[in-house]
Length: 168
Image (cartoon, rainbow, N blue to C red):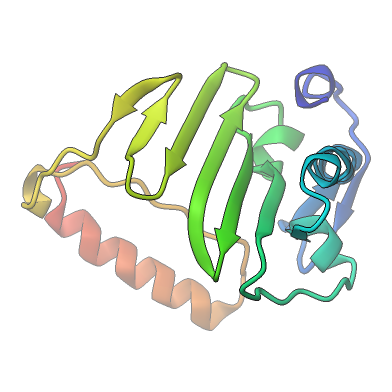
């Protein structure tokens, strides 16, 4: 669905909490599809979907096996046709993350991880750099969806602190 719909210029977009916190029909369709298919395989599991919660569904992480789903992680990128959006899914058991999958169908990247067994990108083991000095580290940062002036000040202050310290 994501691959099919990214090229559509005028996607139907709704606003959640603010003008930059968006949801599309694709978000809702992907979430529904994932929950339907996972429910068939794991009928006793629970689900917390970003879009379901945004629409008022109850959300409570318990000890029961629970799938947490962000059907289009990076909706803003998706809306603008920028190919850095993904499907993010994690399975929690006893409130502990056991399995995680992040898939970007637009550039065919599949990240998987299982607790205690490391992380993989397209079936090849990956690891963090191990760099402990900020002045040699590459750091990525997101601004978030809040445009509350106080929160934005905190984000800007943190970014300024990091910019002085990191390599890039």
